[in-house]
Amino acid sequence: MTGRFSRSFAQIFVEELLGRGYQLQYEAKAYKAKLHKERVKEARENSINLYGVDDTVTDQEGKTYKGTVYAIFEKLELNPAQQQSDYAEMNSIDKFGKFVSVKYKNEKKRERTKKFTAKSNTKFCADDDGTEKCFMGMKTKGNALKKLSNASNFGFDNSYFYEIIYENNGQMVLSKPGEEGSYVLKFSDKKEGFIIDSRKNDKVSAKLSKYISNCKSLAEDIGKGEFDLSNLGNLKQIVDEYCKNL
Image 1 (spheres, helix red, strand yellow):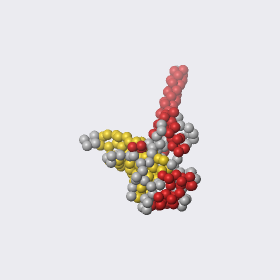
Image 2 (cartoon, one colour; image 1 turned 90 degrees about the horizontal axis):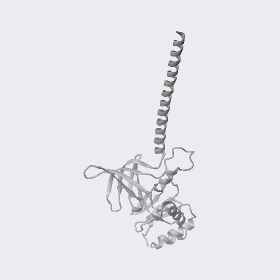
Image 3 (tube, one colour; image 1 turned 30 degrees about the vertical axis):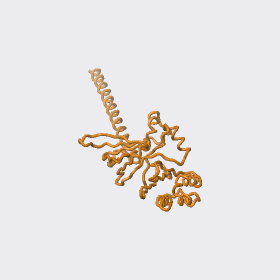
Image 4 (cartoon, helix red, strand yellow; image 1 turned 135 degrees about the horizontal axis):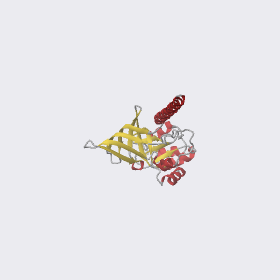
């Protein structure tokens, strides 16, 4: 009797331990999944990427698509201690800032998704937490070393989507998302933008002066070093003065 009771008790005890183990394992998996979901949500909120925001994309021909916009400018970092990207991430890094997609409904009210490239001079706008931001895709001039680096890394394509931060009569000052102090000047009569970055002011000024030599008066002032090109206000002034007095 005692033997049967002891064996039965042992069986029940083991079964309960196993049951608790399975339950703990299930709870651990559920907690891990919840934690991962929260981390993804937080990472997205802190990212410069645009995930499914409502607005428009306008192609080179001027056709506008209204719908849900997606644009990826950077890797979504979930582990701050990670120093290097894995193979899959490296395999897609050349897409950062170079593509935008929009999910929209066609004339038949059917859902479609269309992808656009920065090199096609596409413009898109997106509502980012109540603030509308607009971006312009383009190739750039002004930094041969950076272009060479981009060419070797990204298949000879240095186009990118830059955020429009100032515009006057078709002339623009733009910035590179996530890269503070890096600007682009875009003039309506020139297909490519001009990079303004951390190089010495005299070197950038000389190149910019040559680039806008068709606007003689402004080009001369820039060449003389009258503008500190690291100052955003000065870049806006250049845009305002562009070709007003040739």
